[in-house]
Length: 225
Image 1 (cartoon, rainbow, N blue to C red):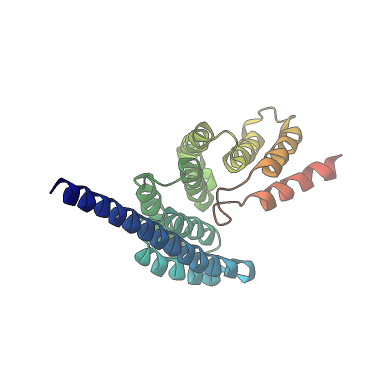
Image 2 (cartoon, rainbow, N blue to C red):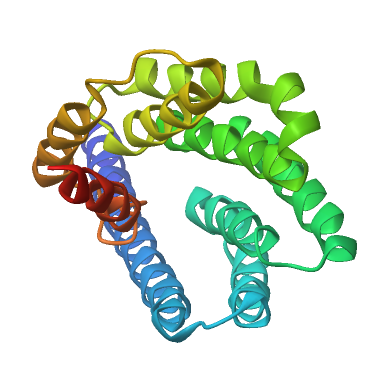
């Protein structure tokens, strides 16, 4: 009887081990499928020419989000692309896009797997989009929210170049109205360039944007030299 119990325990351990291996394999296959589909959708951004093209990609990612509800990257890119589209969308569409982006960002904050440095970068980008609707009025109301969100993003990951860049650009823009000293702006951009060079996203689909904005800003520095 004792030997039988030992055999049964041993067989149970083997069965559990096999089930664990199968579960790991299933999870890996699911991840692989997710990255493949998301990568296919995001690849279309390179040919997107207008707000309608961006929203077409958003709709694809929304369908993917229903298939993989625990993945934070789908939610992230929905908010990110909504915000990008809002800058060029007609006024009547901007409110819808911004409202969806805000709800999506709040949802991201509840996702335990989300990269909070990237999430708060998005939040700062959201308030920047709000200001862009009416700079003279909204700038005075929301500038603190922009700075606070980017600062939180940096606090979560000081090596993330996106919030550092966006905060630097925002402060430089503010200085044009307040007269604050921005003599170190171009030197700051050089440091951020090094941050981008050193930065490696966790996966090939994790947020890795911002260098184009950096290059555009540096063109002004080159013209002043």
